Image (cartoon, rainbow, N blue to C red; front, side):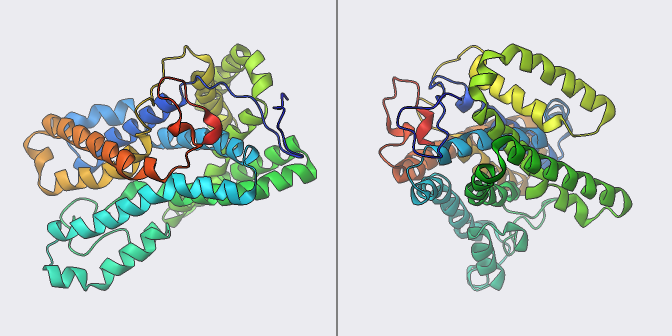
Length: 364
């Protein structure tokens, strides 16, 4: 492993290329989730192509891979535990807080309740409190809002954020485990634990269904993607010198998974694809030059789509509606970035560096 000169004791700080396609990939993943949700929420047959071409689940899994790569790197490059958590808090929570509160307030304009009944409803306060602490499942809907939609949840995309936060909290423990029993031993243990949890849930789904479907997609089941991304961070130098070989192996493993459905190698192969296209495919330019809008797209698209559906705009013209919705989501993400996200980042963050240079991923 190639360590930087300023590495601290027990810190694995690996040189990662500043010029990469991770911003573009995350934007694509967020965009895919939006398109698939547009189809499933509206049930417009003319948008069915999005459901056939893309998978929101795979896009989310790819997000977790990227997150694993970057968050382990962020921890290893943080001067202290406090600094690590500060970076995580600044990056994710201000925008999240803003979206939850804004949706709660503007929901009054869409609610079938009167303003007084809406703002004095216990559901309103449960929604705010539960969502602000990432317990979205406790109160996913607002009083009288989207009650005529096929799904009343205000922002069904937020379920992944609690998993993301739990990953953030777990990384210091994971790294401590790696120091205790060995890097590869720890990575393998966590990956297999996630795999067997997912397998166990699948057996219960086949037998009982119901709640086990939701339990399967919670943190233990998603951990293998996060760990696979982290593993490729820790082995980046080796991967770099054998990228094409790994890519071919990943293709074979992916084909085998589709054939035999074991799911054991799926997360690993997906992680290789993501990191390969992120770092070893042709560099497509500084896509995030004007800001990182992927997070905004992800946490904003659901309530905007729900609003369009509530006014039956997708019934009138699905294609025009999705086009206008995309423009609306992009504008909202732009203002969220420039109005909230960017202002909460440290000056040392890579987002604050020169817009003319490829961004330094160490500040993630």
